[in-house]
Length: 394
Image (cartoon, rainbow, N blue to C red; front, side, top):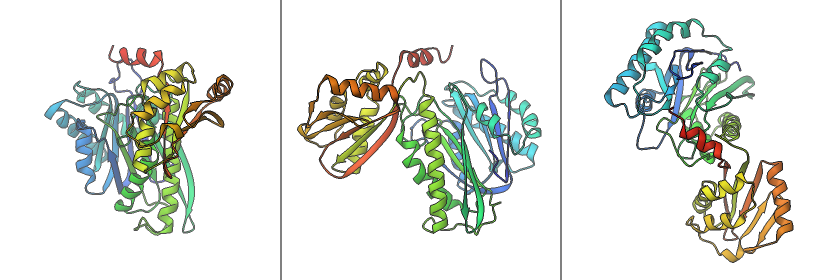
């Protein structure tokens, strides 16, 4: 992945308990337009607090990301650590500290090893290169089994524009911002307010429509930077055609990254989409889809796999959505297993089981109560998920 105007690098600073790449740096050639979306968890990590503060200026020039340590619930010392490590990057790159954005992921409640990070910064800067995004994607992983990246190109006013991103996430994934770390980059010329609008809208349609375990993190961060190197007339209005084209490409990139995250969920065997249609309002559709997608009983049934549609009905019934149970239809892919609230028998369930095994499958619940719909991309809940999280700190 090459994004004109940006370089990236990774290093092993000794933060992760089992070694490996754990520090990434992405730098722009000059100050660029920047936007961000962050966790809505009331408990926010130090890098989130500092990053939000610095992004108010609408510009940035570097992102420093560490894995293995969340720098969350670390008090004033955590904020000092975020400032000191980003200041080290600023000194090495000869920048103002305010244009360096921090992000962290890993274990909560442990002091950030500032000395290790500062020691690694010169090596990071020395290895910055346009094709360094692959290693950066590896360095931000925690329980991920593989790096996640996506990129595309498009035309804006006759200019070729590149858009790409990297992300991490395999657990603590649930809609309430971005549910992970994601870093997006483009060489398009775009103002910061337009970037912010496009990012917020795209996140709502993608990263906020996935769930692995129903938990959100203290560190969730999505950043979007634009170098302007493509040479297109600057996009200054989110309603103009060029902005709409960039928004569509950004949504596609984030949808790709979101799918990769769910596919790499901790202990995942089966992926599926919960699609609620025929709801009275969009809010009720979303509430129903999220309730079903995060139900431990639904998720463990899918781990079986077991076409236990009764668990879907039970979760739907407690979701708060308004509907008549006697009108609900449920289908696994093209296979209907419930019509008007009543099961269609063993043959239908056997066909639905084959749809799960062929997966990923879309499970559609039609409430026949209106025209609204919503979806959540999710996965099963297996014994491996329990094992991974039971030993996360040991």
